[in-house]
Image 1 (cartoon, rainbow, N blue to C red):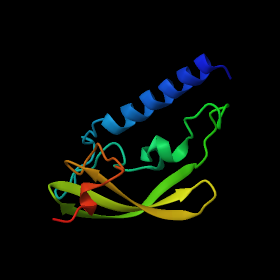
Image 2: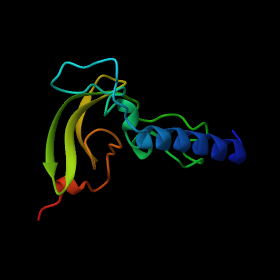
Image 3: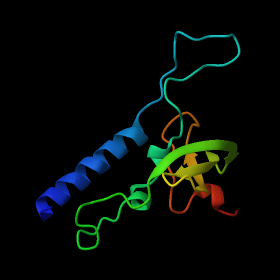
Image 4: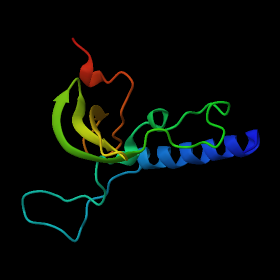
Length: 125
């Protein structure tokens, strides 16, 4: 893979990830039970995992831009509001079926969940 192809692939992967993170979650109008709303998209998936976890962006050590840590899915999240954010502690499962925990946060708890390097959910006040 040439440097130009590598850069193009990185740009495409980053653009797709950013679109996923910023996608608004829509209320499904076809569902109503009088108690809660159902949304079109899951709030957190394995695809929300940071690209820096999944890829080595150095063309010298990863010349074919292969995924180093595949994240298969997100499960069993618990939610709490902290510091003005909605925080999810989720169990993420890698492609190798091994699990690890991570904190994701959102401003509204419906969409735009991110796994920040330093989550405000972890900050002590």
